[in-house]
Amino acid sequence: MNNTEETGSKLRWLWLAVLVIVLDLGSKALATAMLTYGNPVPVMPLFNLTLLHNTGAAFSFLAGAAGWQRWFFVSLALVVSVVLVVWLKSLRRHETWSAIAIVLILGGALGNVYDRVVHGYVVDFLHFYWNDYHFPAFNIADTAITIGAGMMILDIFRKPREPDADNRSDNR
Image 1 (cartoon, rainbow, N blue to C red):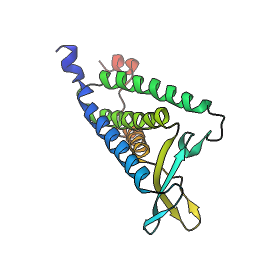
Image 2 (cartoon, rainbow, N blue to C red; image 1 turned 120 degrees about the vertical axis):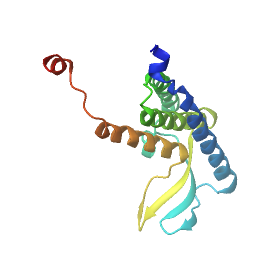
Image 3 (cartoon, one colour; image 1 turned 45 degrees about the vertical axis):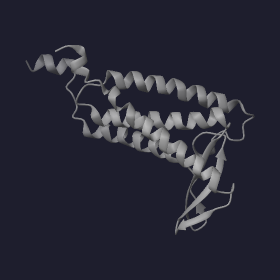
Image 4 (tube, one colour; image 1 turned 60 degrees about the vertical axis):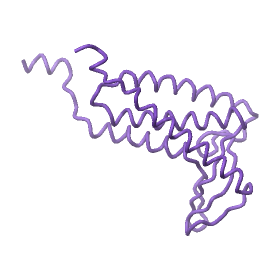
């Protein structure tokens, strides 16, 4: 078996990253065109559409910084994206779950990078709340990143432990 057959070319899953980017950027464009900044539009109990701009990272971390965070987060996301593609390429044929997790994170990261480069902030509009508690607004890219990260965490628990090299030599 050659190396290509063994790895199973998980790069074919990149279409899912492209889908995440298209859905993310499309939904952000609609939110920007149809919503007034900061004005919540009730959709159902516990959920509003609220257009907000986030210059920071998750949960507006570093949003109040002097502007350097924009390029820091762009650079970080691009480095992480390269690492994710290399990781994706190295996966074996049976590691489909990991491939999906990686491309969800990749698509979300690139969707938010586009916003940071073009606008200087990330467009958020999905807004959940309970009474006076408001969860920070987020977008489709954030959702994809969260689902992908959750899948990776679950993967840790669903993979059987491989015996280490010492145990394998003892059991022969």
